[in-house]
Amino acid sequence: MEDQLKKILFDPTVGKLVTILIGIIIIWLVIKAIQRNFISKLKDNNSRYKTKKISTFAGYLFSIILITIVYSNKLGGFTIALGVAGAGIAFALQEVIASFAGWLAILFGGFYKTGDRVQLGGIKGDVMGIGVLRTTVMEIGQWVDGDLYNGRIVLIANSFVFKEPVFNYSGDFPFLWDEIKIPIQFGSNYEKAKILFIEIAKKTVGDLTAISQEKWNTLQKNYLLENAQTAPMVTLIANDNWVEFTLRYVVNFRKRRITKSELFTQILTEVEKTNGDIKFASATFHLVEAPELKVNLSKKI
Image (cartoon, rainbow, N blue to C red; front, side, top):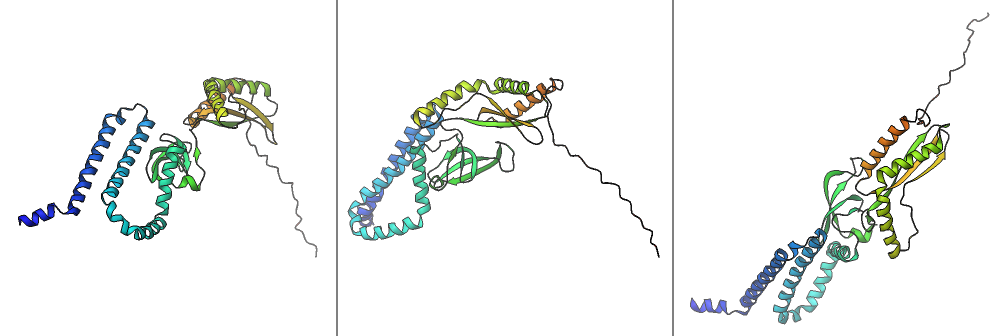
């Protein structure tokens, strides 16, 4: 019995397994200690999230390296077999490999980060988390009007960053241009209407003009972009039914709906105060009466 026990304890295979087990435990104890004592104390949420993900990935990498080193003397004879098996695995798991490559591209390529509002793979929403294979998104829109959450959490493969355009609504420029259209009757005071709409926009979103212009100037330094007007702007066109004013303005990407509601509320209130000087237009339909018909039913025999 003792001889068998000694044989087991001093067996090279058992020794290697114990070495691997102890090594992996030490690696993950160190990783967890770093996450608990250093990474968790980072104030920036994005930096803390990325650093934690990288440290976890490092733990898996060191574990694989440890196993490779321990069994390095056994790997030579399996080189060809491993090559063939690796090619088959790579073909079978090409989507997984593409998703892993997408994860690396997202982390180091600046496609998006947690908290950004994106449209990816046909899904629009806010990024909740970026995993090794999938990005977790809190969806907005669909059956809900406006940029509001619908409560559906979507997992999107990271490989989509190579297959489809990635729309980032809040990256280097966390503002959007939005506009509303206001139909005004012919014969209204057009100049007064234009000034009124500009004043309402400045009062509602004017504080974003300087901030958004500064952000845009920073973009111009890094990219080839034309100068853009971030201050509210009003234009008009005349069609067959009315004069259509378009109010264009810059808004925070999270406040499109509430800002549009506030603008419409103020426009309706202020236009009513003009006592008919400015009138809203609406579609009207004029029914034309049919001409009177006289039918003679008498018949001569």
